[in-house]
Image (cartoon, rainbow, N blue to C red; front, side, top):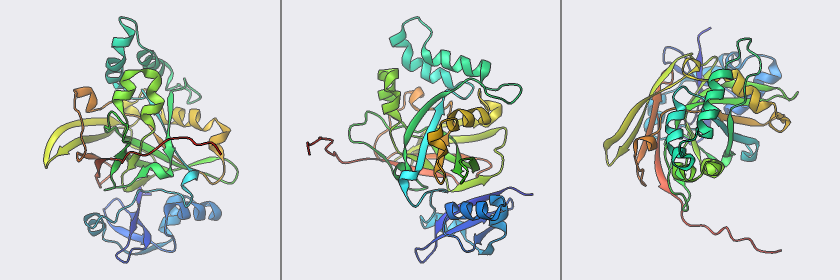
Length: 330
């Protein structure tokens, strides 16, 4: 059957709705549900695929162009309780992804081979096991919960203490855990994983700190398999002019790990197989403006686009007001 894409949006009256976008670009409402999460629960209860559940609820036509123009597009997944949505990711998973990271850490390592390069080489040699079984585990990181998720047009808010806020154009896998504790992949989304690369460059052991930032998802949830070769463009616009632009690659043809291997090493932990939870897992990238010496600043617009997704992801960099982290005794 033809692949579909699901989009969450607000209608003209401010209520939520879901639209299904077919390969011909025609969008129709998914009747009776207000979220992809609700649709996924219905599909599980009915024992049918997510795509079939959406097709069974086909409704009236939806004008996605108007929704995009009016700023009514939402992230393609969320959870009624944001604490039950995990955002995580894996790095050094793409061919060429070690180059920029290695440059960050070479000064500290001197002439020695960096841990980044060793991790990357492990993936090249063992990230795609021939029998489709378990391969070498990747680098892994935690980004936040559902409160950290931005949608199309939402600002990417950098903490007041951040040293940098830069884009990471990539693909994210979207999952729900069923009642039996089995992860069920809903699909894939275009993403901007957004990190603090100056913090990471300062010390590799600060990688965990550098990743505790918001991240953005494009409007479309691609239901079905991700194409083997994904080609897109990452762009930074400042004051209406393109400051930096670079193509980026994803899909397994351009990765040192199989998606199945990345999924295995995330969901092997029982913590991540809790029924009802949603997972957004970022698969990594090899393209960073930071590696080209770009210094972002507040007001910059990040734009990520890639086929088969038809709607670009745009988010503007903002900075949070200072907030106290003081701990008081009780």
